[in-house]
Image 1 (cartoon, rainbow, N blue to C red):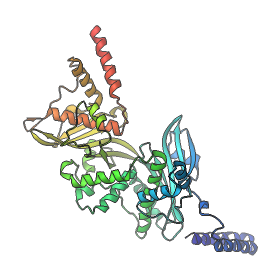
Image 2 (image 1 turned 180 degrees about the vertical axis):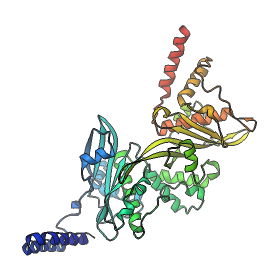
Image 3 (image 1 turned 90 degrees about the vertical axis):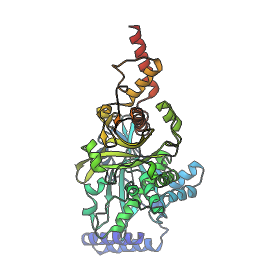
Length: 466
C-alpha cells in the first residue's frame, strides 16, 4: 500500500514537474523513488505522517467558536506503555483487544505519534480535537477528524482527507450528523449485540451504530473502514485522555443484562424519535446510553434518602437513557449538535401493579435539571413540570425539621392517580430518582445536595427568628 502511494506521488510530480523543468528532474525523481522502493528501511515506520489539523488555529476555532486557546500534544503508544510500566507491547495489544480487530501494519504501528488538541476557554478545558489515519480500500488513507466534549461525546466529525470516488455522498451534513453524540460505549454495545446474535427488534433499536446509513453505492468497504477508524479514535482518546473510563468488559456486561432482562426494563418504542419530538419539538436525533448504578449505589441512595429495592433495583440494573439532540448545520458541509435533554423510561413496581413512567429532563438554560414532562401509562402529569431535584431536597429539609410551609413545598401537592389508583408516592420517588441520575451522570453533581440543604436550613432558621 505504501509503495502504491509512493508510485502515485512520483507519477504526479513527474507529470507536473516534468513539464516545467524538463527530463533531468524526472530522472532524479525516478532514481530517488527507486532507492526508496528497494530499501524499505530508508524511512522507519515512525515516519508515517501523523494525522494533524491542516490549519490548527482556524480549525479549532471553527470547531469550538468560544475557545480562546489550545494546546497540542504528541503521544505514542509505545512510549505511553513504557511510562505506565506495563511495556509498549502490552498496551498496544490491549488497545487492539478493545478495537476487536488487528492493527494495520502500515497506519497503526505502536510508534506512530497521535496528535491531541486540548481546547481551552480561558483557563478551563472545554473539549478535545483528535483524529487518525485510516486505510482506505484501493488507496492510501483517509483522515478522520473528531471534536469531543468533556463527556467523550462526538461534538463534530468530518473527513479531513478522503481518497474516495464518492466524496459527494460521504462529505455531507446528512452523513456527518449521524455521528453526533456517539461515544465509545455505543461501539461496544454494537459489538456485543453482534456477538450475542440478538434479533429482538426492541433491543436492536438500542444499537446506535447499526442505524448509521451508508450513503455510498460502490464503496461499502470504505464506509465500514470509517466506522472502524472512528472506533479506534474513540479508544485512543478514552485511554490516553480519560483513563479508560469506558471499559469494554463493563459495557459488554450491561448489554448482556439488557438482553437477558428485557421484561424488567422499560423502553421507548423502536421508533422513538416521533415520541421524543412531542416532548422536545426541536429534537432531530438521539442516542441511547446504558447507565448502571453498580459503582454509585451508596451515592444515589444517600441523595435519594432511602435504599434501593434489591429485587426491582439491583446494583447491576441497566437504565437506558435517551440523550436528545438538536442539530445545527452551520456551514457546508459541517454540522454540530446541542443536547436538549434526557429521557428516562422507568417501571414503577407498586402494590397497585406495574406502571411505566417516562421522565424528560431539560439540559439547557433555564430548563437545565428541570422536569419537562412526566408521562405515566401514557397520561401526562403537568404538575411535575418545572420541578427539579432542588425541590425534592427542600422537601427533605422540611420533613427533617418538621416544618410545614406550603409556599416552598412544591412536592407535597402533587397527586398521581391512574384508573382510580393513587400512586403518588411511587411516582414522586421515580421522578426524584431520575433527576438524581441525570444530575450525577450528566451534570456531574451540579445540584449538590449538601449545599442546597444547608442553604435551605439556614433560610428556615432565619425565617423562624423573624
